[in-house]
Image (tube, rainbow, N blue to C red):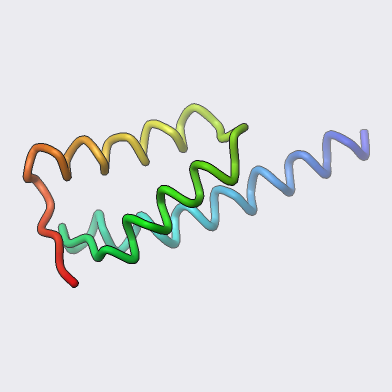
Length: 73
């Protein structure tokens, strides 16, 4: 049971981290180069992301490619 609890805490921590990166992007429609780097770094350093987290990150990158978000420096 402890292993499951540790995994749950890790998942909540990851979710909290990703939400802290995504929230400003989703609420303002603006993405900084730093935000892009943080998202990419987060994806690469957390290969076992939950599917829902991956969907959110991919949605941001898809929207960036389509011009839906403004990139600011």
